[in-house]
Image (cartoon, rainbow, N blue to C red):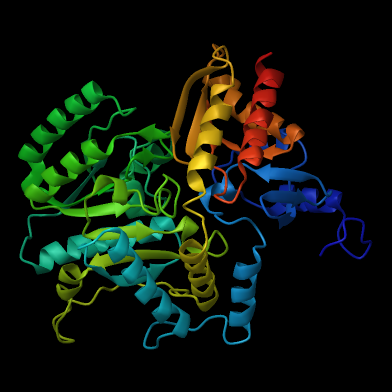
Length: 449
């Protein structure tokens, strides 16, 4: 463990300056980053706490960007990675295979079949992140349609305010102008299906009516429809009901489009069940998993496909029906070992059984933040957010300022505009969840008075 005062190591001040001099951070305006003062540099962790280079502890209120499930430095996950290091850290899946990748593919296929009976999602293609899991799903869907003779099906449909990642195909089906508008000249056009801001019956009915008209107009050109189930996370925790999604996806399938479900954020217990689609009762053709797949330890993603999709790529070497897509670290052994240990914890422990108490604690803590500070409380399982009430305009960056102030109260959270995202690890106790929200509440008071 790093000793904070060890003279042989760079000082906190040196590390902070090196960060400012050399690191280009994601989704970060660096003029603001530099103005915010010394960066918070995480040096180690302990359970649901992050510890910076100065030894200060912070509750990890966003699960290290929605990934961490069982807490940091979990003994079972640590042991699995260490054991795999004694075997092999990485070897390619191009022309070879690997023991943990094979085991994990079988476990995932069995797990998804148990949770979504009859889904037939038996084939597993590994990538490294949620964006690439969606990217390969788009390519699979497009190529499958072409090879099936459906050559007019060249387009995709996605929800308004969708977010599916940052590679170009994933950005093309994204719909958040703040993130995506600058790249418009590089993207393909997607049919934009209306999505409700909240799970209100009248709003959902109106969206479904407009969606039906869009399917009537464009359905015969669609290769696939891609959705985030139940919660559109990066859109600001926008919610829709299982019934809305079930009816929307039924329209897509009736139109001949394949169905891609992006459970990168919603998977592995985040919405109260292992997969959000369990609550919908609808099986997709392609299922994208990442983030919690490895317990939040290592970059790993998987795109699961039905046998029908997989069979569409069979042919001799001259047929050119091969999926020409891959990644250097596809099926990385260390990441797959962590994922197998993660699945063990879900299957052997009480992770899901402990969720209702944690979900209730989050809801109760958010309800205690006074209405004078909050326009809306959004929550599905352990995916939640507080929409701040103020009249200072977007230039005031109130959400950002609240999240920065929360660090003074021992909490790390991130904003989406004026929404403060609350997405604790599933291992966080109800009391710790209450402390996260209390820290955010105190930060709101600091900023808004």
